[in-house]
Image 1 (spheres, rainbow, N blue to C red):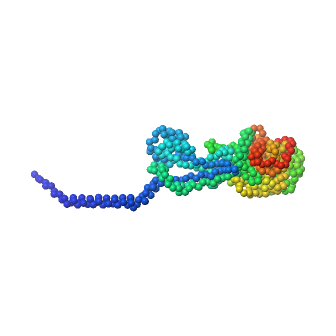
Image 2 (image 1 turned 180 degrees about the horizontal axis):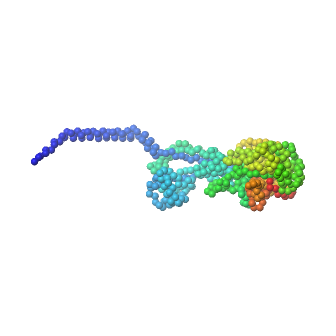
Image 3 (image 1 turned 90 degrees about the vertical axis):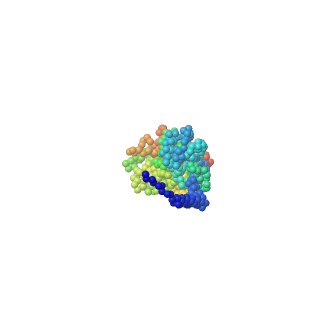
Length: 577
């Protein structure tokens, strides 16, 4: 039998290994202790800063948008504090949220529970998603009181318009981010908007804000904008224009009321209108400020300017006789007509009767270049320069291309176009003794830039002729105001259609001023397509002028004329020109 002897063990080899292992462990312990001392003592501030950076954030502080006020300081637009509810989808989906709380959350936010879940699911890889923007702070507090993980609120501002529809077309509105979208909100967006601030905040492990640490940059609020309109007059004009459009079943309407001396717009309204506080069903056309952006042929409201130029050049006098018999006049291959055969008229009665034949004979005796220049100086075909977005220039064709018939039609307001505000601006020259101030939608703090268009003698002479229009012998008896002298001119304009002009669609226009002895206010009114029987400017637009002007004179405490009002004799409708 083979017997194997066990190999003797060398205990010295094992002792060496144990010593080596012990030395390695001691060295590792020294390294760890040294590293701990380095981190906890020597690098303590660096580590604290790194930790803070993971929990400290920069939060924007929204700035307050400037207010919009009327000339008397009444509010037209203001930003009110609100809250927006947002969610961190990662926290929300990781939490066990009772079904009852989810239903209550959806109910408070006006959402369907499935829609809420779907919205959060679409953003599951993000750390931020809005649930509801700009809600009342009280409602936001109810949402937060549910204590649902991942649901938070932040402060924002919401734009509110106290006058609603009344001043909507001039003031405009902002979008959900408080940026101007229409009208003066858009035109003066840089002026109104503020500069957001910033603050440093501390969040907990769930990204919730637990402390405001410091303000980095305070928010700078936007500047207030003071408009030229008077809220009282704006409401008056809005009410009367809306009543007239409904009464005459018209397509639309616009009105501009100006201060005759400063050119400031005291009221400017349109129909149809819209509510800027609730724009869910607002159509694009309803938000358009037609008085500034839309143009039309002004018709017979242009006749006073033809007469003014004829007087200015010394070619005619108010008592110059013109034979309009037999009520028609051939100009080239075309015929100019009056609604009646007025026979022999002087210049004053040409305006009073609104004779197309009479004003055509005057216009054809005027140099085309001078007539064009006169219209151009009155602002026709020129920008208003109000800064309003989309303001119309209108159209005034160059005189070098005029035929005799085109010159004739321009004398009674066809073949050119203007906005309601442009027409009112032109009448400023007649009201302000020949000087036309620039119009403004913003309250002025100094004298306006003005241009002399005609002599004061000419302006006064034409004004006195226009007073005859507002009488029983004229075409605008319904524009009269008890106790005041009124000067103005009607227009009943056939609308252009395919192949010519419509025989059933009209524009009813009136432009005028009061008190006529020394005008303080100028107004232009346009009603588009009245369809309830009457359509003459004297029957549709003139009554609106009378009601608004009478109320404005009373509200502004403007004294009646010192001189006697003109005698009222016999009634007459105006003709469609």
